[in-house]
Length: 193
Image (cartoon, rainbow, N blue to C red; front, top):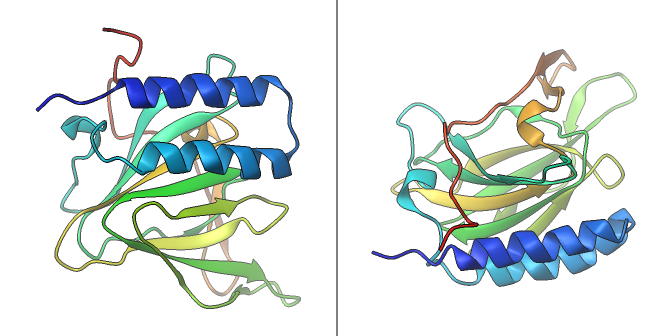
């Protein structure tokens, strides 16, 4: 099967133009969400090596990192019933559902330091867009909503997310630092033919 990598290339170019304007987070969330929605509305561009699940844990594949690390684009691949721990990002992020379904649970720190669920879980279906940031709510846990198949979401972050020092939380408020890295060894050549 041929994959239309020009969709990803066009998205990266358009998102780069948006970032070059030095927009506010609100503008990124408004205009960037439109760009991401256009990317995830068609599921014909993600090569299989960036959609490969792992039997033990979710995978985060780097698709593109801006040369100045102003933004990165990753595919999150969820095997059946896989989930993240409760974690933060420390930067803005847009999440676009490409394939399958996932649930996101938001959390916040209570006055006593404990981590508390903040609202009901949200379910994303293909084409849906979600947002995270320290300003609007940055702590969440994400899971594949499907018990019998893979789900894939495309994330755009305001940094090279695989190198950002972040935190994992437990419900008692204990924090453990982590740097996620990436599952892939190579990125797709979106600049080729």
